[in-house]
Amino acid sequence: MTIVIKISIVLAMVAIVFSLFSGAVFLVRDKSDSRRVVRALTWRIGLSIGLFLVLIALLLTGVIEPNEPFRR
Image (cartoon, rainbow, N blue to C red; front, side, top):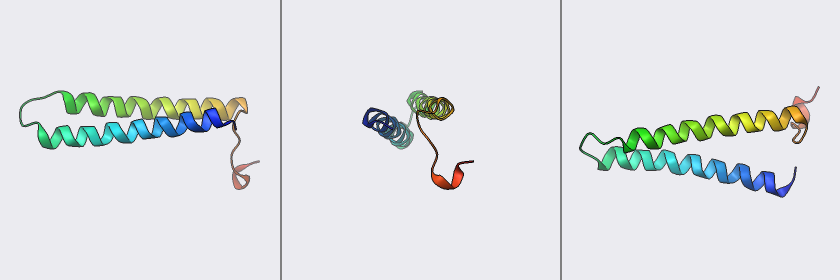
């Protein structure tokens, strides 16, 4: 697996965690009927599903390979 793929996966995971924590901050800080919490958590879900689909596609195309115990 190339370093570009590894860095991209790590950056996507960091973006997911950042979105999760920003949603938590908006939840605590905003007292009004703000949509920022919903928007932040929607981004987190979208990024998570996108990363999952990209990982499945990379696995199916053979770009990445599973660890030894999971190989057939």
